[in-house]
Length: 250
Image 1 (tube, rainbow, N blue to C red):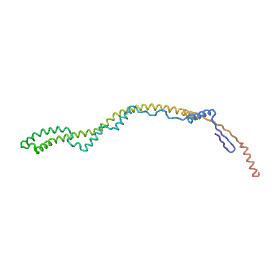
Image 2 (image 1 turned 180 degrees about the horizontal axis):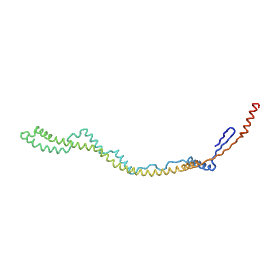
Image 3 (image 1 turned 120 degrees about the vertical axis):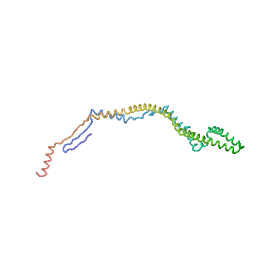
Image 4 (image 1 turned 180 degrees about the vertical axis):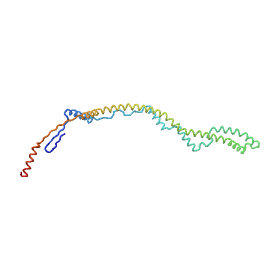
């Protein structure tokens, strides 16, 4: 770096150059920067940067997929049952097969009295006999029908409410298996991250050394030289005084 200034009678020229002992270090540093940064392309980590699914996770994902596609038969049955309830299918007493035995028991208890009454009047087997027998059986069956049907409907409603919960229980074991897989993947990922860190250190190490080197040499002092030419200020003053006397005629 150089420059010159005119100070009215004194002309000074300044020139700054690196200290000769420092020049070699600067040249080495800039050469290393060019070689390690500008002329050396970097590359991405050549290995796999993520962990493969473990066998446990693969099994869990397969089970989850299969369950999602096929569904839970209990849930489907609960849904079908709810539809049957809303449709009134279970309002028919004949849908309960156990009521047949109760009906036979009621008939056995009522028939002897009804038969005896109509036989004594000579009307056994008449339409009135059959009608009376039917009314007796219906009255005898009514409490059983009401109680048993209501109790069974309560059991079925409870099963319908529990079915979704039972379906969700199947996912507990699957989620547990997935948790085991996640832990294995995390362990494998830590090893991969360690490899990446080591690789990046190797990639950045030359440039880091160059930066450290330049930082060190930039802190060294530099020296310059100063050269100049200076006129005699006394002679200049006498010359100016003589000129002024001539102008004023003295």
